[in-house]
Image (cartoon, rainbow, N blue to C red; front, side):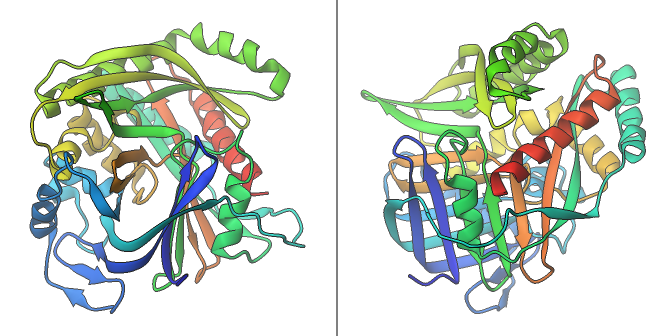
Length: 397
């Protein structure tokens, strides 16, 4: 297949991959224009035209050819009516219509390369993080918000040159360690691989009998697991944490409210506190469900749900403004959402455990962070962010 632009989605039930290839249409969307990824031409079509196109993608129908859309975190500023925060020159989304999709075995590429290690290029120190934590904490004390997801970027350089296929193969080879919403897109014209091992779902649409259901599964709360035999102990520690339970309850209620507004039907919490095991960590998540009784488009759902509550906070619009003021960097692919529309597969991730691998600059950008409440402590939150980084790098190495 043509390897210049392709997308792979992990199919966790089968431990296989859905490979989308032969792009018919592909572009990088900005606020006031888009860049054709096949021809390299700039086209004067901004967010208004992009949103109009999303409004024509009815989620009640089947999609014979795969459509993949990576919504970057900053696209969410338009969803919460903060257009003034969007930088004219920063990408907001990648849109690709493919001609072909195949289900294939997971990559198993033989390599004689040594274990992959990384050298830090730009690293957020604890002192820098603590200053941002203190600013965030003051907003909590002042009543401007109840919870804020504070993140930071890490820039690293690999000690070996790997291909896009080799990165994907390393990340997905073990079915016990790959995220349920893992995916990857390689774009040769940008020299980038967008690589995710995400375990988190923004939404998933399922047919249950004659009914169409939409689910969202927010994750809040993390404990590091130093040895596999200590997982039960780590889960006991997590579910007894007042701070982590409060976070999960707040974000679950936010997502339940968002989903109710989208569907105009009462959303229900199916599971309030459920364990999620990933390498070196254990999380807790909830499942919220609503019924779809009216026609909904991609735009309708993203306008109502994006960016996800677990990577923003409460109340969402105010927190998005605060995150922009405090973090001072573009999250980009990290904390965004990747949507797959193919046949009856209609699913969107939340891109945690995700990285942008730049083959031109020979660097890896990885974002990490966590929720801040009045019960948070800066050192513990900083260590949690490092544990999430370590979990991702262990899979690659």
